[in-house]
Image (cartoon, rainbow, N blue to C red; front, side):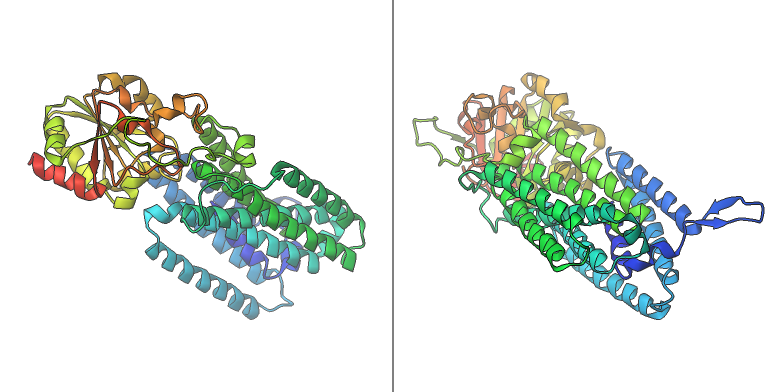
Length: 504
């Protein structure tokens, strides 16, 4: 849906003045009846398919159908946008417009294919953050283009259009730098810990108030004047700085929520751009992305016992980046081996697997699926417990397990398994850390109040981990030192494969 919002934007930006040249309604006959134009019908069909795609992607069983619906809708949107661009501005020339569209499609296709081939599932969160940023940048560029080359509709709307331009550029600027910084944090290029400036909330408020004053001046001043351009430019700089400042103060534990919020921002930036260039489909898709991203962010904040305000204000994790405790402070950890884990699994009646980002890094989902099939073949009840923010993107673990052909009915949400861990014989924690951290139930902890999988209630817990290092939130995990927890160190894929061989 995000891409669906971007492509019409790129086609219309070839010639913003083309917008009013073609009416979405064409005459049907002399009686006075009118019928929608083919472009309007195509936009309606694409919008419906995008809605069906969003609905389909909300469930495992319908995700493939949702993707297909989105792809078909995207194809229709592209065809309609190209057709409209080729016919709506005779003055520019069909050949010139066609060449520009072909260049845009070619460059975009090459970049997309290269990224698709290089980016692994572990890099998907930062790729999505980058795409959000590109949507924001596109909104900024189209805003400047629309202001420098106003069409007849823009001149008719006057101050309303100027407000659209200003808000579109502002939201786009915030989205661009915020998304890029989030991607750098997720990729480890920038420290994940919060970096806060003195009086950061006052700085954010000052930036918003300054932008509001600049918007009023931008609308009141003569359009195209040097002073008006200066207001737009100064606001753009403020927006770019604000986006970076907001994300800079947010810790790694909140990055999945930040990516979702930036996705929502990119949708609203696209919607504003749709108003700028008079494109109905861009308005619809932008609103869909913006609202769905906002709702997803709300659900994620609920899952983490956080609020939008607390996430955006940042400062999460500043007290949690501590070193592993010395022996005797938290206790000693118990290290196990492959043979002992294999025997425990063979003796178990019920096993729950809780995956995390480490499983994605090790590409361990395939041997995990094989282990699941083997245990079920021996009569063991095996299910998966998925935390809402496991990994670094909502649904990250679900996609990996589906990719490995794990049956959908075995993949349960946190609420479905959390009250039954006391009946579980063995829990395999594979690459998870913060989502199974009992420190969340301790007042004063940086992650206090965050719902977690209560794996420590099981009879035995086996943690597949490379080392005793803290998780992405930088908070030490007391689970590793509990009496019923055993640590199995090593690469998750290799250790799971070793367990499988020991069970054969």
